Length: 325
Ligand SMILES: Nc1ncnc2c1ncn2[C@@H]1O[C@H](COP(=O)(O)OP(=O)(O)OP(=O)(O)O)[C@@H](O)[C@H]1O
Ligand code: SF4
Ligand SMILES: [Mg+2]
Image (cartoon, rainbow, N blue to C red; front, side):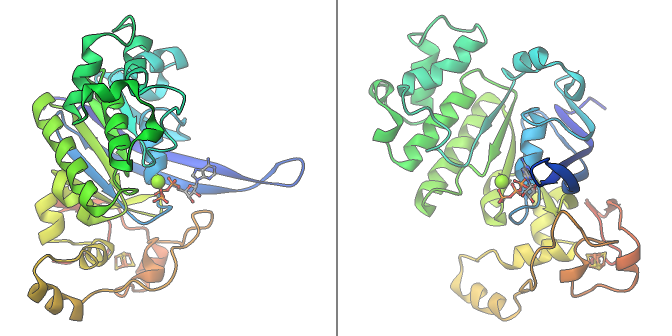
């Protein structure tokens, strides 16, 4: 079997909790706690879960914008986790990131053309921003080339996110990590950006890791979906399997919250909706055994003493002692 484009093995990130003037370490936040997954060439993996479950930390670890506490990252035939700063900078030509906030992530003092050209110049692929690849990418992202001379503040949120996408794709990377790229946008604009991303992937064969807190967003764009809870992946499978045959109680609850377009189906579904109660526990002190047990309606004694492992059940991998059949 050929090696996937990205392979993450037991990836872990702990942040120290520091107190007082001397910044004494008094504990640790288990932001990402031993996750493994793969992304094949040309594939989109959706990564979903509630706020604080470790999605952005995972995204940043893969690009080594953060250093892992433990674990391995293999990308494009290289061991990313052992590369030096200089080597990782070179590899970023092949792995780029788009952030949630198109306002904060673009330099307000640079024109759109300068913003999009920068990665090409940094990687020695263009001399300056007059390179034809710059305007070509601006147009591929649905903006007119005249916009190239203007500044980010002159644009709407959706247009700014198109600039962020053009900047990420201009080096023609193999992998693009999209960290909630449409969460800050109006629903109508969200659909346009999702369509643009999917068209560009089909045209150029990019692979995406698409991070979202909402399953309905990833349902359109992902071929596989990974569900994350408190630093762990609790279920991973094809989009069809996750949506039509969810096996982990948490996945079931997330799917139950996705609104249905058909009003009749939506009324029927509302009556049986699973509403998650209680807060997400602190990642500084996660529950023993299964981390979801404090909110799980199926929890039994074994769930507090034994941590469920991610096992293959049917066509998915699920971490639950009592998965749905
Ligand atoms: N630099 C940091 N220092 C300390 N704790 C951090 C740091 N970055 C993230 N965390 C903590 O790690 C946990 C995971 O955060 P992360 O941003 O990865 O979550 P997320 O799933 O992306 O959430 P959101 O949906 O709100 O963006 C959170 O408890 C967060 O407070
Ligand atoms: S292991 Fe137990 S607590 Fe955890 S999801 Fe499954 S049934 Fe619920
Ligand atoms: Mg985040």
